[in-house]
Image (cartoon, rainbow, N blue to C red; front, side):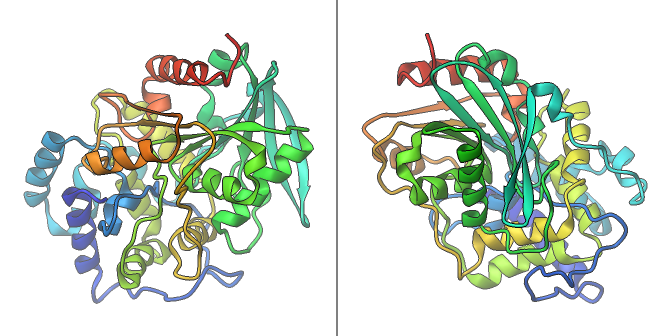
Length: 377
């Protein structure tokens, strides 16, 4: 489910790194080195069967014409800058200094009431807002935070109770050195729901948040009123272990900060989103490297279970950005999951569609939720 663009970009990075970058083949532990203040990675998002890992992880969100234009430009770039893809210029302000202080996560307290709940020996942060008989739980992307849903809170606050979670290792939640698996994150979501006294909720997951909400549904289906995937894959892609390791190694490397900055820029292909891109990238880079690597291994490690929904008794809703990876076969798969499904595409956006076109996104989401009686009229 990777585009040719994403695949080539990663191939060049890998080849360029030979002789100066040796992948560290180990899981993230408390001995994972940190250079300065650790920063995290790009968005991981999966694809269809036997798809290349790079498209899944890089999630360029490009249409076919954009992919061709990007590839053409890429061939003209100096090989020493190939990982920057076409984002090197636009991201100059970020790449000019690796010592630049990362932006603080969005002030999620301003979105609603802030809470902390014990999760083992650590604490999870979450925010509540809105009111109503229905509840919506929002789960952010890889290396993101609850503030990434800031544009949805005012639009939905009068229709449902809202719960926005900082997953462990992210935002204002504690960041222990542990195994950041999808089941670990799913257990955190259920812990927050219990603390917030939520018996049942519609789960909304963006990108990596989609595997997380799918694992919540596996662990506690009685707690789930519906599954909403925002530019995220509802089944785990199949790929060789060596391909996974090849990709992860680039983000264990000393250069992972620059790799992250430049890869993330490729996920904002629409002109006019540069300021948003810079803000998002800066917030992503505030997440520790060991969390980023651990979450990637937790998603694609051979010892980890899949998150395939297979069949659902609740509504399944999908809102995606244009991308060749969302094939007709995948759309048919989505529609086969439940008697109640809805699939929507928003044009002219990249991976963070809920921030790039919040008005159009909110209108689509509200309409789909109302279609299945998941929010107030």
